[in-house]
Image (cartoon, rainbow, N blue to C red; front, side):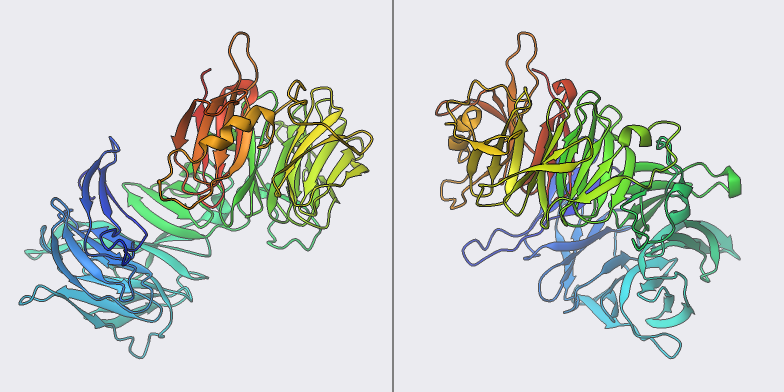
Length: 606
């Protein structure tokens, strides 16, 4: 909302014949208090893909996800539907509203889809939205259009070949060829200042563009470049410095042909997906899930470093989580190949690097100096993170130890408490025991009938317990590579370093409570996906934290036994929880969502 602290969000989902009233809502929030001020429901039936306030914020324009991608204009204070109309049968990529109409009216808006540019106006007689397609003319190429904005009173569009088109009266009047080296992904208007030209009020406006080439560029009304920023050059510098690493540490090549198994830095390549001007700063959202702030006032060496507000993962799932044994650090890894080491106290990523493949498992050594990274290819990468994070760095940062452990995915890993062994659970149903002196294989534990999901060592480093995707619990003599025939109840007095297994005596009472909180007519069968036990303290009782397929995080007393043990429930993820762990000393609880690629941190007080 332009003049106030209001934010609008749209839901995804559709009404059905059984539930015709279950239509997606538009919610208007107060971003200071987080409270919902208005709920708008009724017009859109399949979801809302785009929204935009008018310049004064009196109206809210939205695009639906139905077969016609319908466009609606609502009054933002009451939610009343003012006008509506069909959009386009093709998916709409972007929406823009002209900011030079009356304060309480929508004078003009535009949308873009594959090869279609449309301008909408409100019919004076019927109040319906009327649309007309843009005319490319001779100088413009009809191609995929990715984004749009208004440059003063005229719309501009960004094309897939990196060009920017300026439109006047529905016709393309100017083409800026190769404005970007790759696809233009976002355009954002910079509201110009009003000035008088012979008694006539005019606007001096600019527009910001961002593309797959990592460039952020400001253009004037004639599409002349005024300012630019290459995010690829600047991305290694942030308001939170990375110890021992500078932008030049990252290899320039984007392939892995050199055989390097780890690359340092925040990105291999930055793709700009969203830009927004705020005073002298530009907020930049990247395709890699990061939000940064760029200072456009500085010139040359006077520019301040980038400020990073969000750093995360992109693509696929976040499947891996490991906590440092003594420090308030934890590491995450995902299908994007990223590994991020975070400081739980500052809530910042302090060491980012890439691996050659999807990261599916992580494990810290008992002294916290080594981080083992398990990939979907079955490759294991041993990273000396203590040396990498030291101020002096190291002379061979890009040469970690790597070896192939399995021919299938690595799902789980755990170091023995004495640091002598690393257990690696694979998708091939086997557990591989490696000697950490040279990370050579000393045993293969066979017996599971599905992929290994969790591994726990006993305190004395002699016994290993494991779960698999077939809901199985097994015990092993890890040093001799043999399975132990132990009943789960008989193992209840065994002291385990952690308890991440979701099957076993200390967690028996959790399973009957999983149906609690679900609708009575629900046919879903929830499953536990992850668990961990807090560090026992002086007089306090340990706790067990679990995550399930119903997006819930629950906290139980340890052991969680009996028919209905009490628990506290925490919600926030939008999909199944893949990992949850206590940090060192049980100061924090870290939870990781798979498909939502979200990392959440809770403070724990026993």
